[in-house]
Image 1 (cartoon, helix red, strand yellow):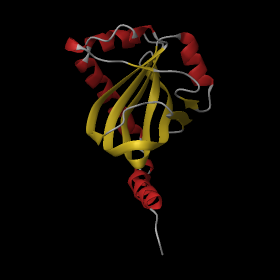
Image 2 (cartoon, rainbow, N blue to C red):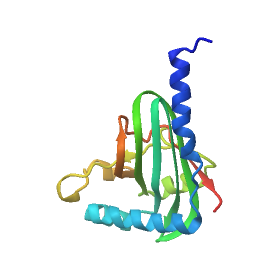
Image 3 (cartoon, rainbow, N blue to C red):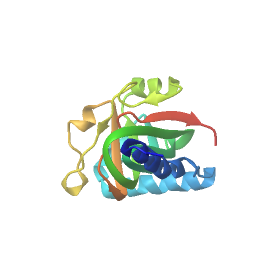
Image 4 (spheres, rainbow, N blue to C red):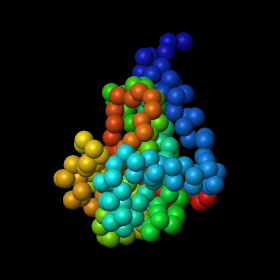
Length: 181
């Protein structure tokens, strides 16, 4: 039986990505991880903390796991907080094909700085970044300052706490859907 290189890469990528979806956190554990991720972001950037205070909503994914080798996948669970209270739990899932190699665990925090952006997100059954709404990824400068053009967008994302090595960092194509906990 002859196996093509493409088929072999697909099989290896699937083996890498399948474990990502099988580790749904219990509600109490997820809540603790969300709190820890927010504390970590506040410690990294006082400017991010100030921006969080102004946000209409804060969507936190404390552990997003990504793996890929030509074909990749990403999975994480989190929650939307409004006024510091959890309103709804969500997952983020994406699949990708292209130049990528590695495994990574990261934290993602999305700030909804505009009421309409938050309303549109909450009304959607599945929100796809880049299709249903664009997200500006904030760049942290010296002393944790945020690049000014980022903070004028309706949704700003912080990606931090990267562990592992992954060539490819993007939120494009990530689908965020509500889940029950």
